[in-house]
Length: 430
Image (cartoon, rainbow, N blue to C red; front, top):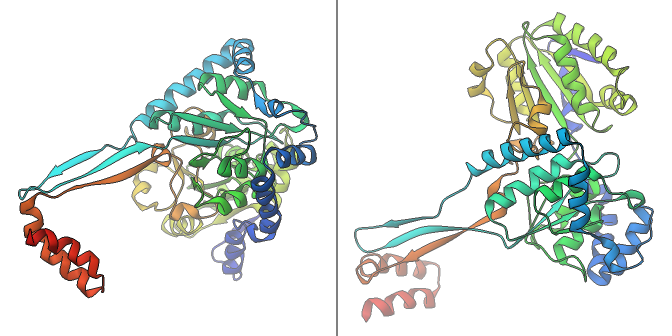
């Protein structure tokens, strides 16, 4: 694994290259995705069937073939190994408990002049969840997207997932049953996003679309934003690690690979203050690579998008990591909590050597749908509020409008909005 030092003459150029790796080539696929969206809008299910035949390699004979039957979900749930079913329940319970703490509250405030102001928080009517498939199926993504919607009180949840060769992952089906999903469809890619955004003869139009996907899914979400709300534009998975001399190279190495095995575009970046830790971690990465089932994918990721940076101080290391703003950030230092106040930008922060990133992927409780590509500087993890919206509550008494009305009308006058001003003054004169 490549090692660079902040003291190197070319470090700035090397670091700029690291930042550039996070950029998604949305422009490059926008025209393709726009064509797919247009076809879904114009042709509905006819276009869906055509896209499934082209991209997922199976023929849809009827509209009913697009749907996944709830009885199929129940059967998968009943047939999975008991230990696996128990693990799903443990994850479900922990994720639900965590997200229940995020629920925003409606509130009302009463002012002395009779003004009543407040906020009403309501769930959206229908949420669309995109659950990846293809190279790997992710039942955990179903839990992480469905549970906050359930906690928010969303009445109807729609799930879309690609099914290459018309095969559905049994554990994903089991997770759907556990979450009480009634509407799930064998549709993937940009086609699924378009179908949920605009609706087809079979798939209902939703209010918000969440969930990760490839560059085509991310681009489609960006293009339909405004027609529906979305959670974020997510790119390839990332991990950043801050490490000092106390960190164990074998832990660091396998944690870096935990993201590299996702796909060839994943980024694994470690910044350490100890040169020996850097060297030993690089050696351990190579040792572990030979043992992985997805060695080819992980090796490509590490060789093209993996790097270990040796920094002069932990302060410098943190500054660089804040610029990177990784999706996942592990803090593998002697006193991890002491660094927490200085970490400004990261999707999820894992503190201490016993908190590897996969703990967050499956069982800890916080959401694993996280901002990538440095967007942690302004995006948050998927949460309950992604499935809710707020309405302002305003009620003025006669005393209140008498007290504040002229100031309001004066501001309207300055903007040249005569009707605005008169709608207030007519009440002042009454």
